[in-house]
Length: 194
Image (cartoon, rainbow, N blue to C red; front, side, top):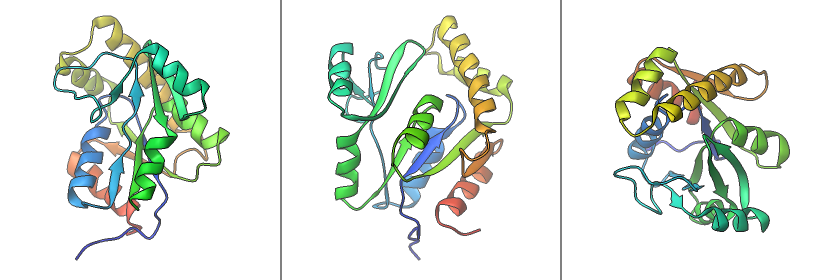
């Protein structure tokens, strides 16, 4: 039996790096093909090993990014550990045109912009690591970040965990202490099976 979400508003999924957002999003898309599509954000950071331009991110120069922003082409944008990230309105329209449900994987500043400064109607989920020590281990285990970037990401994570508890921001907070359990909770929320 193929499930179809009754609520077809976009999903905004947030949480600190290393919390498992990407894994949970991919599991949701794999389990329900032709239902969801992840927006591909623009960023000024350099690609990590294995990342592909146009699939992982649109890797752009600061000049290109600023032009997109200046021309009103971004729904949200933020600087995160000295790199810009943003969701383009054109990418969202493309997903809507294919009658799929967009998933936005964005961080705290992006959530604040979308939730409080736009008319963008979405559902908001926060993926919370059960422990900051585990989060630090995951970040270090990637082997892709300098010590300075790891410390900056951990500080951002601390701020995001406080922000997540702000009443009225997130529709659901999911603690990712067990991937399968967290996935079931996400799927049940998305499909209104609660």
